[in-house]
Amino acid sequence: MGGSGILGAAMDEPESSASAPRYTMPERLLGDKYEAVTPIGRGGMASVWLGYTHGEAGFRRKVGIKRVLSHLHEDEKFAAMFVEEARVVAELNHPNIVQVHDFGRDLQGGYFIIMEWVEGVNLADYVRAYARAGEKPPWPLVAAICIEVLRALSAAHSRTEDSGRPVPVIHRDVTPSNILVGSNGVVKLTDFGLARAGDRPRTTDPGIVKGKVAYLAPELFQDSKPEPRCDIYSLGVVLWEALTARRMWNMDQSDVKLAMSILEGKIPRITELQPDLPEPLAEIVAYATARQPRDRYARATEMIDALAGMLRKHPEPTDARAIARSVRVVNAYLAKTTTG
Ligand SMILES: Nc1ncnc2c1ncn2[C@@H]1O[C@H](COP(=O)(O)OP(=O)(O)O)[C@@H](O)[C@H]1O
Ligand SMILES: [Mg+2]
Image (cartoon, rainbow, N blue to C red):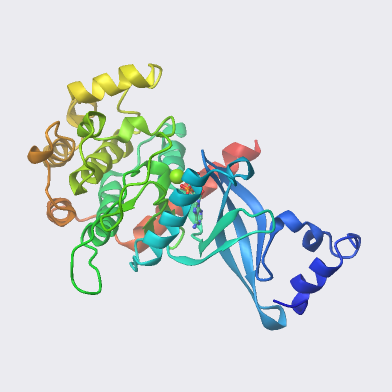
């Protein structure tokens, strides 16, 4: 890749910071096409950036960039997971899954993923905004958002090889912050960082990040093989929490105690906390979060049917326009409360 184009030229002259400071920070340049601009999140193994892909004639497009944290560049286990994430997601073409466009390595040797940029909020912030305003997100919208996530899960779970052989992908990290609610009302599941494709031997896990334990299915603490029902359980917890705008488990306890509570499986029915929620919805949540995998929905599509059946009996609109409207409300509220 030569020194043509604005980025290439800047890379040839790293000292000329006066004219174009942004382009002379090599750590923000990823090859001669991508530029990481604003850090927006940092997890256990990677940072996520808003950035641009640059083309000819000043063409640029917003992208999401996920980069391995520099202290992990030499860590082969993390590298293997990251490569796996890119590989798995690249093959999942679905409107409810954040698309991966490219995969590369920066000048420092760190891997990065280029993905579609989703303008909007993650579900954790979405629910938090309502909670801070002393409200709860409207349950029909929460149900509609979950249906979209279930569509993504269904696509991942029913993935097949070109030959037709099933090679399901289990997400294993279905949490509110991995669900992106777009300003356009389109919901997308992201962060397949822990996902495994069924056609690959399991790479060793470098441990579950703190805060994620609360969404893990009980059988995973007993070394069961991840299966679609694990993701359904996690989404059940997400649904429980979004409907009640509170955490399902006491988050002040240690991870070991938390795991014990999960194994015990005593989950309060949402209608005990919030009697105004419809009883059939409480039933769906209880079914998804059943202690025994065999007592849960076997497939994401079964849970879609149950939630969609419920929504049909309620006249409020829950389409993308209605979700988009609620994201505008949330964004306005977040802007107001964070600037003063
Ligand atoms: N493609 C994207 N578009 C917009 N925001 C994103 C995108 N990817 C991630 N984010 C934001 O960054 C956060 C962390 O991203 P994620 O992929 O979940 O990384 P981590 O492994 O650190 O959890 C998300 O909760 C979301 O708010
Ligand atoms: Mg995440």
